[in-house]
Image (cartoon, rainbow, N blue to C red; front, side):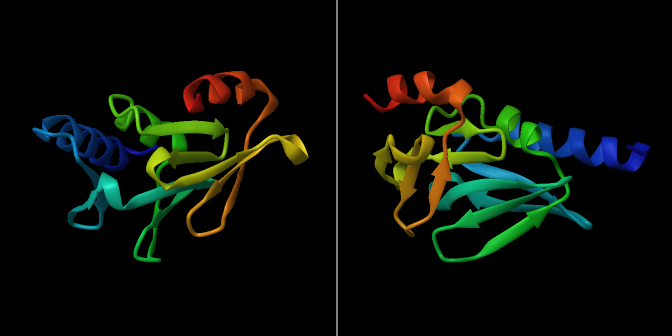
Length: 128
């Protein structure tokens, strides 16, 4: 990671921490930041060294950060859980929890998010 990337990452994290209500996510884009209200984010999916952010208006944003970055940025928001190493999910969009096929969460847009064996017990506790 070069110095510019590190500075951008620190600036984005700082922006996220400075939000009074912490109800938006500051996403670094070229030349600044884009702010996405958390209640519009359905889920985030890791895609190599990028993350796809899926919103409720059927838009998808690609950000050159890893999922751990967003997990840290959203750590204070109990609505976001990480059921699998490749996904962060907003609980407001979960409609069903299924134990079949190893376990998965079904979202409002009919997307199935897998639950890893390691996180299955914790997810079950959260969803009770």
